[in-house]
Length: 418
Length: 78
Image (cartoon, rainbow over all chains, first blue to last red; front, side):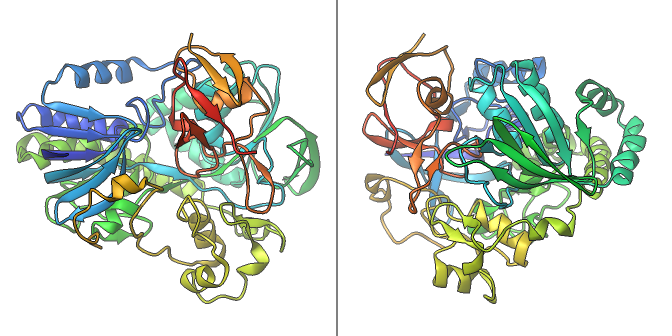
């Protein structure tokens, strides 16, 4: 089977939802694709232990009420099948979608850096733990250490505490002066200042980072470097994330240029490829407020309503300012590059240790020699890590972009277009 | 309250619970064994890392992006 859309939107987080709602008034036939069971992305993830903000609920109801928006949940993009055609797959079937315009709202993922013990059960990402708890993971009475960098650490701690966990330590790698400078600038965005106050935790320490996760079969404790001193903390879970990296794989496969690590866009959120737009975290980390505005602009622009898009430009500039301050504050300390030991696994899919990667010229050479990045996640985890550790640029992904069923691949008439 | 089978054992969970959460509710939380024999559990929680892949009703699925449904049969990789 196949489907066609005037506007195809990939990702139903804040940017994708806003883009769909902005474009819907034009009457265009819109298809909204998302790999999660419910719309909302990571920040508005629903579940038995989640509390959704009103704005998320309202936008979800509005999406549902628009008869020209067709939402496919639990659906992944597998390949580019033709010039404006994607192969997608859900739990039951694979099919092709033709589109006229496309908006990439593929979000961001956590930067997970390898350190001794990070593959032990009990170690998760920081946002990862928050997502798992929202989905019903029991943490009541558990002792937690949260480490890494960025405001997500505090958000994750708040969710864990709300669900009965005991947060023993929040280790932020950024220097005290950087975090203090960030807080001093927050009054420019009063809503963020309020958020910072509600999230503040007395166990928060700056200039602190994880050194090793300890334990045999599963996590039993964490060794931290805390403002110059080594400390060991016994705990049941370690949630560790070093900030966010944009999900650019699909955009790159479609031929969209990058600007640094993010998809490059102009003032209408257009990428370097005509009729292809991008909004939200895949164009650079900036938070849900910026994602909502960018999504709205992209949605209006994609259906040709430049006047409506223009009205949102000043608001975007305001949240871009916040994003700049955020990214400057949580720049990663070079010391984090030496956490991995020779036997620390860097690629968790193919179990490739750090020692097998040292000395290679680039990622391609390292991949060919070691299978690093050639497993099920297609280098989505270790690709970010080796970029940070060795400065290796990730290559443009090749299809299938995710593990797919043979019958899905049989929907392709020809060799996938690269 | 969906009732499912987790590695052959009956498990009842709250509506909207992810299979990733059910792994911990009905077992030791692990999803698979790595190529070098390490036990692994969900890591990223958001469909990126593939650590939480399990077999659900005979198909390979990501536990973190799948909600528990009545009658589901979940098998982890020993």
